Length: 303
Ligand code: NAI
Image 1 (spheres, rainbow, N blue to C red):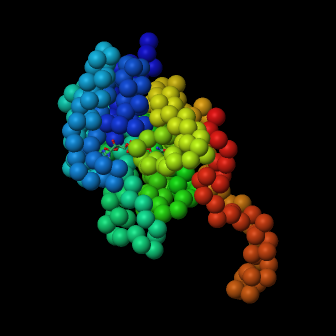
Image 2: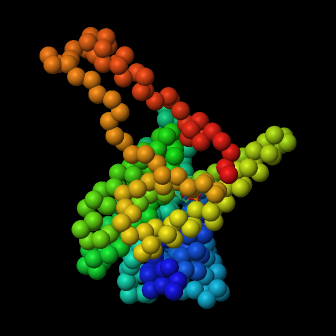
Image 3: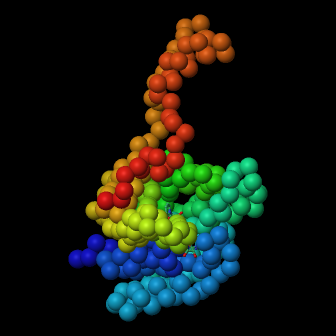
């Protein structure tokens, strides 16, 4: 039997990139897939029904079952329609993959309110809307799961992505909360931080041989390499796996740490700003984190 036989999965942003590979891989494992994609540009402008329908056609050509949805995740009513598409077409819903995303990169000091809101709307609000719309079905059937896409831009840091980093770290909190609140209904929720060569990575120059070599390495991070983990998390093989943050980069899979106290200092008589400067900070400074970016932590080439 295939791993996702009889399961109904919604993959948002499945018209291209990582989401398309999720939809294809899940359908190949027997899932009935709602291929949701607004068909917008990387910055979230415009819409096009083409990408979602094209992926549905690809799945059907391979003998799979899929239906297209071209609603935006960034709107509560539309998110409800995405879930209703699954119910109307296949009669149930077993997994929501919150994958849709856009970028509006700008240094923080220049970022406009519109750039901030657009990114928060698609990633953080969109993940909440679609997940929340599916929750009553999960609750009443006493099963279900969420796979939420996060990013090392939020987990670690990156230049020019205050909106994206905040949204992606917000998704970590959302996913953990969904895992906690829905555990009693046997619903699981996990995050994946992918590294993949997609249109989202942008245009990286390839003018010099050095740049070309770097580009070749980055291209090794194929979008299809993320799919096996998403399929696993959506399947019953992942029973008991919830509240976790995974990463995938080419052939590497990571489990990320989650925040816990690193060090504590205590003074029976309480603290003043001066004693904090004299004792608390020197005691904790050895454990401070460097002001690093994702690429400083993931400092080796993809394997
Ligand atoms: P992509 O740009 O190829 O795919 C995103 C898809 O989402 C597009 O097809 C787009 O039309 C769709 N979309 C945008 N706004 C939407 C909306 N409001 N409603 C429905 N669909 C919408 O990008 P990629 O790389 O495949 O990204 C997938 C996910 O992985 C995103 O959440 C992204 O933030 C995350 N990610 C990707 C990384 C990478 O290395 N490619 C790194 C870290 C995170």
